[in-house]
Length: 322
Image 1: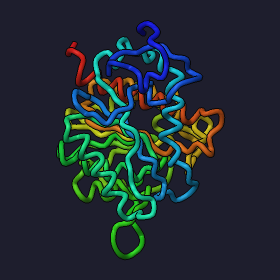
Image 2: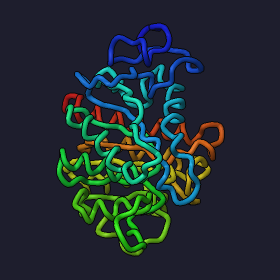
Image 3: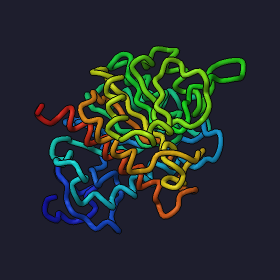
């Protein structure tokens, strides 16, 4: 942590690097007090929000998720993220790009708008951390990332597989339970090198994904689960997606489709930390629904999961190989 540099660092900071102290109860609430900017020059990692929940099948409200995660993140923005031995913001130039813009009155155009949003950022050579929004947003994000990296290894934390096909006749729908069915069918992800963690709903067709369900996670150590994930993905480019309902409702009540029996926040964070070294190229945190949250505990969990992703990205792409 560096010396106090004033307030409203989201708009007043001079450098894209470094962590500075600012009152946690005041100021502009960008993600981790990073500068709000649309200038992609010299930027390593872009944080942006996709406030979309039209694909939700149960309780809506995740359109407010990006704002809530940003606000929760400032409670720890004054210090180096614990327990990592380095500050990722000393090594990564990170901005908060704001939110993806789309027309809510034209829902069929939203997937293309999200994909174009990601295309622009990725074309500038930046990596992305995206804050949702319901889980459908991962589908257009995967399309954009696959253009850059080819078929991806999906590391998917969730209570649900999200590999159910649309049941209605006609074109592919906009549904937050179908994205990875289509991502696999269309070659955006390689199921043979992908893994789903924390599942606890029934879907007999795993479509080739390795499934480490919630019961297996509870019977194993975080390090054991992480080793299985690492063995599965190898050196392949990894897209990491974390649906907050992977956590038990006791730890994340503010979500649209909560399922009892999930991971604790401790388990999830420890598994993520133990993934250090995977070839992470894209990431998102989704399904935080503030209307159903209590004392911001779900948004806070989302912010901490997002910071684990930032640290993982920095450790792989910006730190010297030890």
